[in-house]
Amino acid sequence: MSRAINVLALVRDGQRYVFLYDDNSVETVLSKLAEFASDPELDFTWYDAAMLSQRVRHLQETEEEAQAEDYPSFF
Image (cartoon, rainbow, N blue to C red):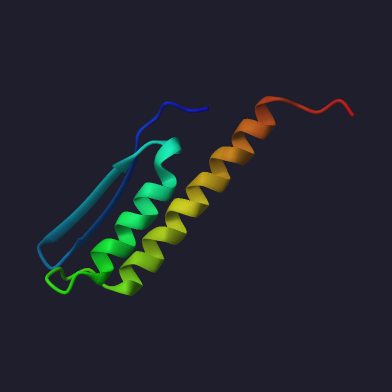
């Protein structure tokens, strides 16, 4: 289990959305992306949420694959 902090950022038209989360907070950050997309006062779209969610999941998969490589299977 990594203790690293992941950084997810979206910068567009002078607006910045920066999300910091650890590997135990993936579901929380995904929920926050949906919350931001549903807020009509923010210029954060469902497309933004989908793209960033995809990046979060890809990073999580990459991390899991790297951990699996650290412990080779002998069977």
